[in-house]
Length: 212
Image (cartoon, rainbow, N blue to C red; front, side, top):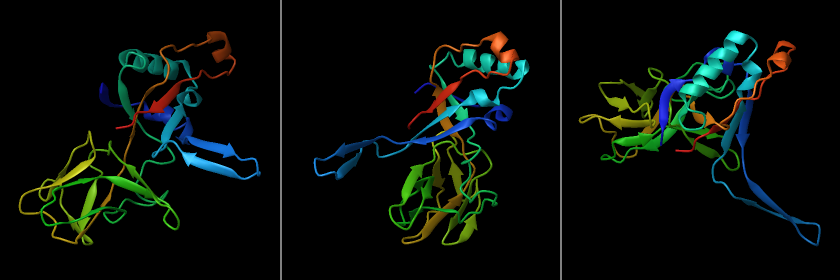
């Protein structure tokens, strides 16, 4: 998949709008009851970066970013202002934030994930774009060291334990991290009315999450 490991301008992204989307079929029966079926196993996020564009300089930066990505062709990193950490909002990342697996004594690779909910039907989301330098990992509650005990692939979110440091059987593997969302522009045309922009009308800059 064509992807550029570059972050969309953060000052613009932090003033954007958007969130997760799901696809559910709802069928109304003759009795008045309904049946529901989830067509997607995973949510997909959509954003509008236009809300963050308040100046001509910001608009020019987005146009340049759009042109370099060739419109919808190349994906890029996006920082979701609401959901970009393994920890609770406002909390500091710790190596015990998220359970990412259980040791077998031979398994070396563990995918970063984030779990939402827990009482009824917790949802596990794959995290493919961690922020460099932010990943902390623990084995049975004891933090291990990046570079010595494990490495992290920043393009896939896979934690790999190094020889001599493979987690033993039944050991809980946990991690904490910051992360970005892989997205692309959801348009090949950025329409900007300069007169309207000067009057305070924001342009629409749609983005959509790329699923791994």
